[in-house]
Image 1 (cartoon, rainbow, N blue to C red):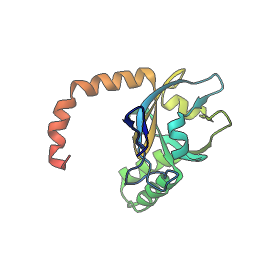
Image 2 (image 1 turned 30 degrees about the horizontal axis):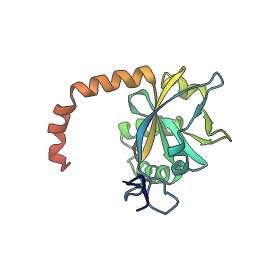
Image 3 (image 1 turned 90 degrees about the vertical axis):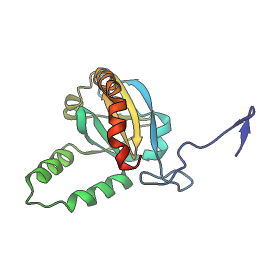
Image 4 (image 1 turned 120 degrees about the vertical axis):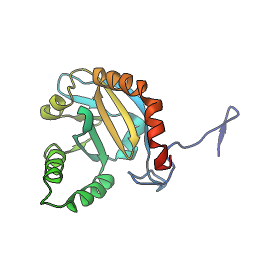
Length: 171
């Protein structure tokens, strides 16, 4: 590993699993938190750390908890395949697939690293001005800052309880 100032420099995105791919072919893992501002035209800067992993084109759709999910095309294709295999006769499956696909759009970065978010997605996620963009393993999430702050506060209060419950999952 290259060294700079006595500190080992590592590539944070070089891990296994699913997601977009890095320039070295390793699967991308999105992590971290950034705050940006939505401009008056509905454009949002995507953090530079995420741009390479997402690629020039990627999918943005309604997510859970009133945020937006952002998927690299490769990860979206995996999710799409799984959703297509859900039984059409199951009402909850139909609702979920409709919800996710009807809100999905393909976005492309402009020269400034921004995307245009349509009004229906901005309204769903309550995006007005201050926005938080977070990495969540194989996807990126876009949150209204107020919503994110409230979510973090609520989740922090039960973090240890949640950890105890998921210990059985082998984590």
